[in-house]
Amino acid sequence: MGKFKYRVMNSDGEKIEGHYEANSKEEVMDFVSGNGYYPLMIEEVSESVNIELKFNNKVKLKDVSIFCRQFYTMLNAGVPILTCLEILSNQIENKKLREATRDINEEVAKGGVLSDAMKKHKDVFPELLVSLIASGEASGNLDAIMLRMATHYEKENKINNKVKSAMIYPIVLGMVSIGAIIFILTSVMPTFTEIFKESGTVLPWSTRFLLGLSDVIANNWILMIALISICAFGLNIFLKSEEGKLASSKLKLKLPVLKKLNQMIIVSRFTRTLSTLIASGLPLVEALKIVSEVTGNKVSEKVLLKIRDSVMRGESLYISMRESEIFPTMLYSMIKIGEETGSLDDILNKTADFYDEELESIIQTSVALIEPILIVVMGLVIGFMIVSIMLPLFNSYTQI
Image 1: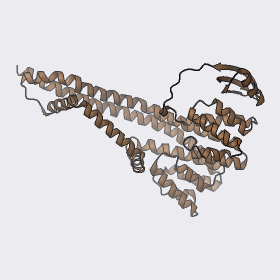
Image 2: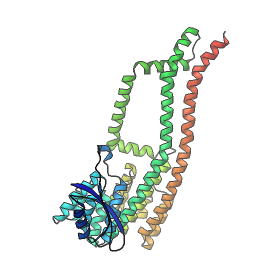
Image 3: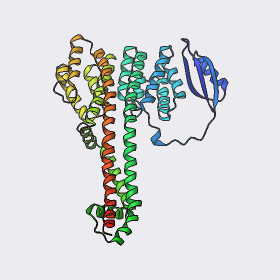
């Protein structure tokens, strides 16, 4: 069985591309025609050696957004859900998502409910998406839900990419600086050891410290690599625990440079997600429970669960949030206006757009602060090392 790539046009003139496994082009043509599409191109894809690594098979937000966008396009064109799933299960590139979609397709074909089938793949489909699909099935507006979620995940993915892109340069700069320090200690310092011994010059404490450190690294590098690996492994396990996640979340909201950035990420996710949930018809209490799990911060999760409990007791969202220190004052005011006018979802959506722009500005500001700080710190460290090397040399020359 071969893999074929196809490009078709639906009844609305929209072009759809995908992949389908079949024994021949004629079989693909039957599949395309049977679904009411007009074929534009069908060609066999040559198979190549593909080594798939487990850590590369993760379902990303981009994959989920494409899934929602393609699902919406077909639903909007009048394609039945089962046919949509069949097409998606053959054209999705991410293996994990493709296999999950095939399982869902089989479940729905047996008479199962789409949202129930998706719940069985919690590691693939976010709870937010599954909850809204269940809401869309109940209200009969699944296509609108898919469009809203596609837009939601596209914006979320865009924000995540901006944060990651902004951090690339500082990380590379830090790694290069650490590499330079290790090079000086392991390659440069040993060449001066004999020179210092022959000169008989009394070495300052800084030079003795560097020579000692260089000697330790040179003679125990295997042990040091092992210790660093064990520490990194232990830290990774700790950060995955509930205590580690909470400690990491608290630290992110206390670090001077990163505090504002992480606060804006939380606010942006909160406003965007809550707006999407309320607009989709979910009750506020249930929406707050889901939102608490997507902010990516354990501190904000606890705060939002307290807010949910307060709303359950009959308090308004504005009053419930007012005592929180995580969210900015402007957000409280906007929520109060939204509750008073009955347009909370629309107000939150517009507020989310504002905070997205604010987040982009903060990302640029944070990077602008981090870069010079890193340069100054690394410059001082390397400068200290150079001075420690040159000072005894200078002293020995002056004594001649």
